Amino acid sequence: MNKDPARGVGAHRGGEVAGARPVRDEDAFDVAAMAGWLAGNADPAGTTMDLSAVPRVEQFSGGVSNLTYLLRYPDGDLILRRPPKGTHHKGAHDMSREHRIQTQLGRFLSYVPRTIALCEDPTVIGTPFYVMQRLVGEIPRKELPREVVLDRERTETLCRNVIDLLVDLHAVDLATTGLADLGKGDGYVRRQVHGWSERYRMARTWNVGSFERVMGWLATHQPADRTHTLVHNDFRFDNVVLDPGDPTRPVGLLDWELATVGDPLMDLANCLGYWVQADDGKLLQAFRRQPTHLPGMMTREEVVAYYCSRTGVTVTHREWAWYQVFGLFRVAVIAQQVYQRYLAGQTTNKQFRFFGIAVVLLELRCRRIISAARRMPRAVAHAQVGSPS
Image (cartoon, rainbow, N blue to C red; front, side, top):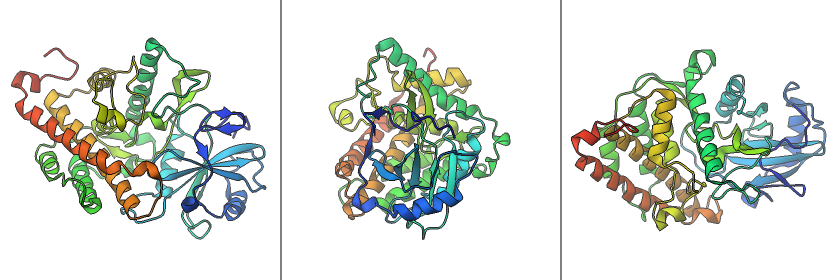
């Protein structure tokens, strides 16, 4: 690994790293034990850093799933990923799987961070973990960082370039990656609908809706499987690292935990489930987590049309209504799982205390889209997104 001190997730500000904070008590681990293990097990091809010291550790406050830490060694920084404490859905937070995906995809996509070590022994720090390179650059979260000032034209360029990351991922030849076994064959859509429905039912608390009407509609109207590709499954602006020299250019894509093989339009729908645009109402704006409201950002429909133009994929307005509802429902399930953990006292992160309101709001959005799809004129319903109707 290059010893360039600028290499890092988050930009340096007076020696600090944006987004890195002291480790929360509930997320602390034995740093000395981790450092000793890493010094003896790091891939020599992955880094030339001196790992004999015990690093200073900070935690990135963003994210609601796996935990991300900054390891500050005397001659450079690394990133550590590990699961949170508490009850997890079977198959979730699989460090070995996430490490394997990043390692394999890093051979094909320059924006995938290089991996350095995988520890599958939970006795070292209490959970499995892996360590990877640190990429330099700003991460666009709810707002663009103060140092990043873009006019409308450059914001539009940034938006296109971010969507191009997804286009490039979906274009990777699956057969060459060694990851084809991540797929389970036909029935991906059905499995996704069933799986996320069961997760919601398991995570539901007394103060949110049932989503039963939404889940029933998704099961009844699901589209046929499309040609499968690699999918990221958590594609958002706040998983993108921007080039510090040109903030319209992404140089990294993070959080490969949920990546798999499946329907690329579901990947796009999952992305747009988080997409709050400028003309959305105040309630939606309150839960915005990325800067998709800025002048120059594409609307959700413009994103779909752009993606289709780049990939040659076609989707009708009626089909996209299904994908849109699924994307929103999936975001609701993730929010509810985190909210359940918060109510159970498994996390004290105060940003999660309003997630129940977000779940209620997302159910209302889903039901409105379903009602609009039922009333959609035939000519509009069967017209392709991005084509004159």
